[in-house]
Image (cartoon, rainbow, N blue to C red; front, side, top):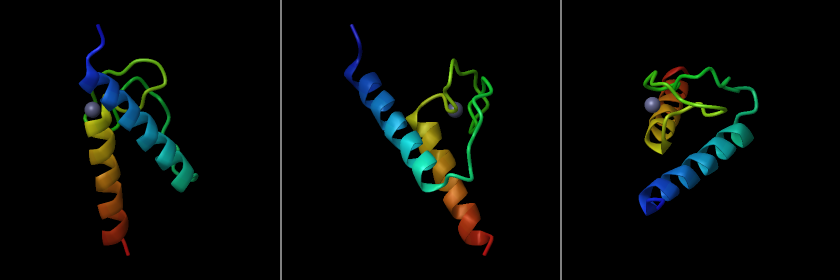
Length: 69
Ligand SMILES: [Zn+2]
C-alpha cells in the first residue's frame, strides 16, 4: 500500500520541478542519475532524490542568486 506521505512528497517534487522549469528556463538540470543536492542515486528522469532535496537546492540557488548581486 502506498504511504500517504510518500504520495505527498512525490506531488510536491513534481510541482517544484515544474515550477523550476517554468520560472528559470535557462537553468535546466540534466537527469544524471544523481541527486543534484546530496549526490544520492536517483532513478529515471529524477534530478533530486526527494522533495526535501529539491526544496533545499532551490533555496540555495535563491540565496546564491541574491548574494551574487
Ligand atoms: Zn538528495
